Image: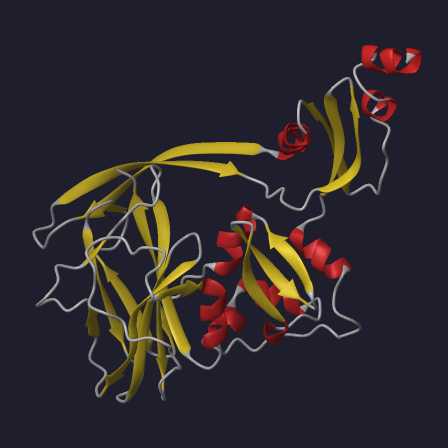
Length: 329
């Protein structure tokens, strides 16, 4: 009892007070306490996050031309970037309870995403270059992974705890949010004659309509069109539409719809991606898209699926993509 009272007087167990739990140099240890174990874990995670968090803000002004008469106008915008770290793979190192208070130490592997993959890479496979034929093989991800001996057919993107992770060799590696957009969203306006144009170009205000024009690379083949949100939700807009000329195909139909509505997913706006594909034969697709909706699609819309599934399905298709930058209201 004397030892327990002495311990509480020091603010917790000895390992918590002294913070002397050691590990490899790349492992950060956070210490936390709370009335419940959940509160203690949150306190420890907060300590780690504070040592990693970075905030960067900037402002700017963009001028764009408007109308055939040469008149110009400007749209002011503000960019606020916050670097957030996914701490969903914290490992308990030690925990205890004293005087009704919970104490815990959590470990976080601070190696970069590529360092983690490199240290646990598959067998003795030799590194090599990836021939960028399909969309998945053209990602910065695949180019970087090829030097670790990990190739497009070896990995799959999966949802995990509300975020994204890469599954490879029966292991799951969480993808930090700061890696997600840079590594998995790629803009390419043309691919061997397949051309994608979004009008109007530039930053769109939420609620404004825009239209997509896709020019096929050959006179016969099949076009598909997808909308990919920042979160990785993919909406199939057009599936295997046959073409018989190289004239641009407009989406949506101008005679029936004003256009696609730019919808910001949060107050700061969003950056979505339109992805078009062309293939000489139809690409396997499980559903036929219904007419264009003027409102955001619900999570249960049968046309929606995972971005990871989209990547796996476009192995042999030509692709082009463009960003749609949307300001918040």
